[in-house]
Image (cartoon, rainbow over all chains, first blue to last red; front, side, top):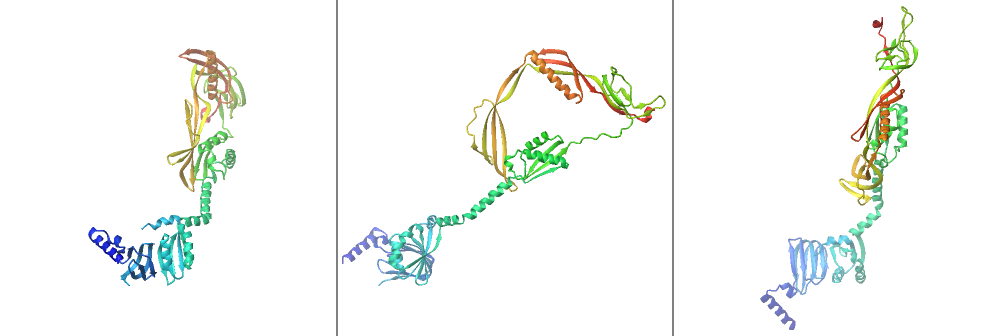
Length: 94
Length: 397
């Protein structure tokens, strides 16, 4: 109950104080350049990686990127830059 | 995102890892702050990635923990490149030695060509060249310049009038002009001997012909001395008159000697400076500092290096500063007269033939004016005054 209340406070603060949501709420910030690059900040770890699929852990749920010929250009604890041909970006909520 | 090419200076290793739980392994790496990039999956259980050489050590415990197999595929970047260069250094050393050898050979003397000399003179020239060190296989750097060689040869060999020395690449070309001594005509036609200048006959050696004059006779130029027509009146025959007629001739010489003369002489003190010249820039390599001479003269010697047929813009320059000094020479009046007489004698010797002798000298006039001694000297010289003069048949008969 307390956690949910905290979440609501954060939500209110971002709405009314014009703070960026990704900072306040630990949401991923995804930047894409056409189909060839995808840059994801605020992930929580790599779950699966193949040349056709990348599954990333988020604070809430998972992010699934599908495509072809994936290469991880850079990987840092909270950032990942993926190169290849991106077909789909899917949020998976359990 | 940082630029990955920075890592090429510290070295980059491509790592291949295979096993299960590769994703967990990657997460472990990133969380412990190890930077990896260019991750590629090959099949299901194989992954390749790049890592900085400096972080390889930190990789080991994480690999142990994961239980995956690791393999290093490719090493790129500067440290490995440097290592490879060291390994292949023989190649570079060889190239360097080759260039050095070509450079040395380009600066050697490879041929001496002598044109315009007969074999005897050519042999003598070669001996002379050997003496001053000009031989095939010598480095040009230590030899004299073409002008110096030219001087050495013309000074030491009497057979040649002139020699032109030219350095073309690695070959010295010598163009020789030999002295041609005119051959005496062996058979002489009928001739008389006549006087060349006015003189008083002192002595006569007549080999052939009829002497017309006697000792102590005064003769004028062109006067008949020995006739080529011999025999009695009416039965004359023409022969080639031969012989020597010595006459006393007279020369006058006028000389002047200054009592005080200023000379520039070298004191013998010198300072040498050595430079390497690149284009127009001179780099001093030995002999620094300014000389302390009040007055000096500078001599410059420049030697150019060559490579194959090209002259390099690099040359070696040696500058010699020689200290000079002004010296005043003072003669007394008597000394000046002596010097003037000696000068006059030298002067006369240049004018008279080699077999002539000076019999006596008289000072005709001696004046001292404006710090100079003027002398007019009269010389008596004994010399051969006979000259052959052909008899033209039509005229003589």
